[in-house]
Length: 306
Image (cartoon, rainbow, N blue to C red):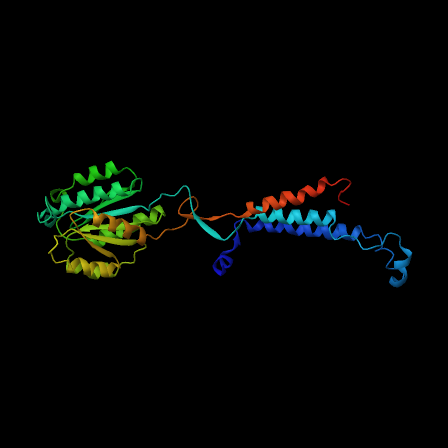
């Protein structure tokens, strides 16, 4: 309850300024409708009450009062009172993901049949099937990092591009994971849709750990370790600690992909913008029934604004 009160605000607060002329007109009409006002200046108030005819106490429920109430309700509704966030109908069900894939000679090792690189492609295919409709981009790296595809909802294009990759087409062998991470984070920031980064790699060079620690990323990171069950993952664990990432081991079945999907959704950092992410839910429509009810007062026979 206290959280809702703290979040309460108006989406269009400038409309509240329209309450000022409403109050001014009400006070002006109230003053002009007081017929005894002119006599109070020249006749003693104790005597005046016996000289005026029809000076009995008037009902507080007057046409002018009702008009002011309707005006206040209408302006409040138009101003857009709100206290709750809701998902935008124009936003993707799942955040975009930038996949950072290592393509080096070590990825051709066959401990994960047929090779680590082929297994990475299979896991990518499983992930895209699980995240149907979500946008996915692809960056590859070896001795340097390269953008293959910006985020797209066309999973067939992503898989086609991933299938054409091999260490032989990379300019140089090596490990430029930090450069690939900076590139992925920058691309997600350009789209302003939030999202996360998924790293598919088998090892991380020692000199990259310090470089990764120096990065300031705006998006969450998940690492899928493309190593056999008995392989040493200490290098990837160090990289995960440097990035504040989740490290997930590869499994034969799809349990690892389900874990990756959950980690991606959990680590996303969404930037709320118009028409995307989350937006404030208007509550002004709740005042419409009361507005209509009070408006019925003008249907009373002989009741007009005076």
